[in-house]
Length: 304
Image (cartoon, rainbow, N blue to C red; front, side, top):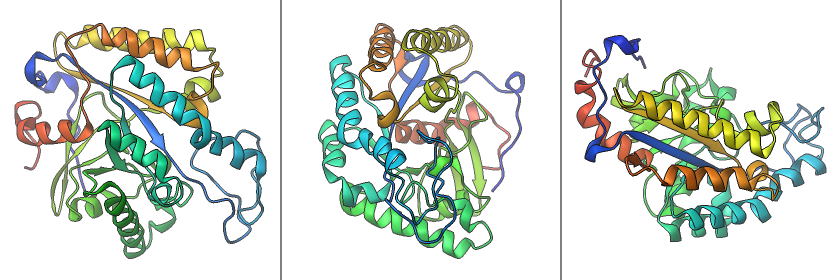
């Protein structure tokens, strides 16, 4: 896998289709955590804990497990209602094991016609555990894709690794499996091409800065501060997109953003963005399909 470093002054203007100026993607990460794991190593659950000092994997950590499960039992349903009220879609990512253990959530997203992107098998089983064994990494990806296809009814168009922890082999593997895009890289505000032995894929940037792990948990923003930050990010990107199209990524987790005292920030932000007619609420697959056909009009010196 390789990709070019092309600074913005060397790029041509990115012109989104149908007169759209800015892409907005608000991701709901639909994740699943095992109660216990084999072995005594601390269980890294692919995100910050509610209580510090994680327990060994083979010991049930009730506070942290049940805090995360709140997102499945309560938070996701409040968020679904909030998106429905605003009349906008989410691009959802999906741990395959959620299909087996919390199928009602998957069906609720399918009923809305929203995008579902495969997001590893189980949230705590990081691909980086297999960096020295690409065969094992491919087997884990295969197991996730098989469950995803059986539940969703089609192949996953792309991939997001748990905790964004992919390996140098991951883009090659997902291209080999016929996927079009990867979301693990946070290094841009525009899509770009990754070249692999199996053909090009699109890197669609994600964000850990504009992410509820960041603004609610790591920075301890209030609901009002979060709303102002989201609007500030949007307004700046919208202004810059007069010259060249940009993409704004917002990452949400139901066990974080789905609480009653936080939902106002999400609700009011969605309503704010909805007032702009030239914003494209695109799925990642729509972006990938369009960019694979048009990337040479943007960054012309890729290998493809």
